[in-house]
Length: 136
Image 1 (cartoon, rainbow, N blue to C red):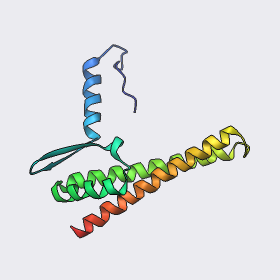
Image 2 (cartoon, rainbow, N blue to C red):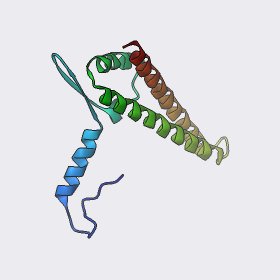
Image 3 (tube, rainbow, N blue to C red):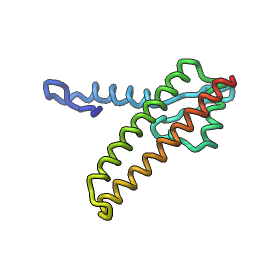
Image 4 (tube, helix red, strand yellow):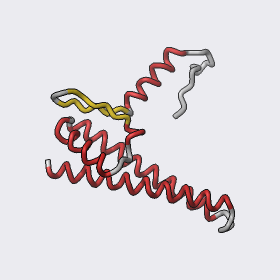
């Protein structure tokens, strides 16, 4: 969703713009409070992460985060996986519409493979998170 600096009447409204922008940024942050400090993750930049990073961060999350925070994280990961699935279908459809040896086909096929890799990594993140939840 694009946030506008102008209100519905067309007047410049920086106060509302900054408030919405900061609230949106806060919604994408995930804070883990543990006895010696805290860690703050920007969800959109951190996930999907490698398995090594996921093991470390999920261990902290399962120990120190509330059930609501865990629920919010799993919903974020599932939504991310769905976004990648949609993007994969779009890239595949676009690739099919071009001749097989064209530059556009190669570009679309490359994008499809990249998004597929990100979706698989997100699915592994979800599996690892759920496995840790069962153990704890």
